[in-house]
Length: 153
Image (tube, rainbow, N blue to C red; front, side):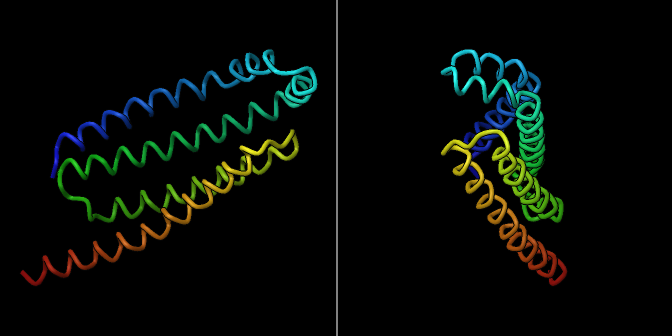
């Protein structure tokens, strides 16, 4: 396995993980800053829904952090060159659930205001959730085949 690619990917995940934590914690401040640079009508909607937006974005941020945490756990198994383990199946299932929850969370933005990007985010995380759930099934079968093969030898 190409260890440079694995190391690069693991480093990127680590950096994104830390930045996600910082971004989620800074969310209330970032929403305020963003609202100051918007047109008056958008500012009013952001300002009126400030608490709800903070809650929704912080929930989505927390769920995103959980997805990254599971990815980092999976990368450790890649580094050990032992990918087909039940822990990765569990991680993929959790990531699928987290992605579905992000999709639901972002759908609740309809109570604040709707932008075209929200529809894209909801759709993207629905697809990511489905992808993770299907990949978990594939990994589960691979783990079963691996264990059967190990017992045969």
